[in-house]
Picture (cartoon, rainbow, N blue to C red):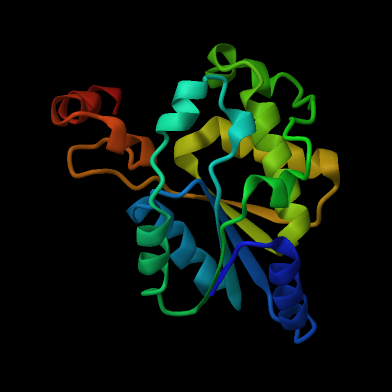
Length: 204
């Protein structure tokens, strides 16, 4: 089942939770790959139902062109998710369903985590990540949320976010899945040319 409005999703989740069913959550920006499915598979093993969000979050992009070019494959993503065994709910909201009238980031103090590594080069990025995850967490209210260790800095930020917002959610880090030549699987890999994809193995 795919939901575009959080109040409808919330009604379904509340109904299931009254039956003592546990909820796992896998937030994504779509363009799903095997790495994402490993998260969903782990979540399905540990919970009665799993919510997968597909939402390209505008507030975490510091460059408009990067946001514009981010791959969007909602139809393909939902088709693939429907092949999984287990109860999977898909939440694919419009921007205003999450943010309302003001699409702005909340300012967070992640105790310096946001200024290191990727944060040095993407001003406000982790404020955007924290903002959208806080909105998603409050809409879905999962028992556990699953994140790949590929985005290691983000994983630490998310753990700090849950602490700051005092949310009763267990954050689960999951192992990296890699391409045969060693590059970590990522939605952004779709933007690489065949030569760039081959050369990117140097990162690993």
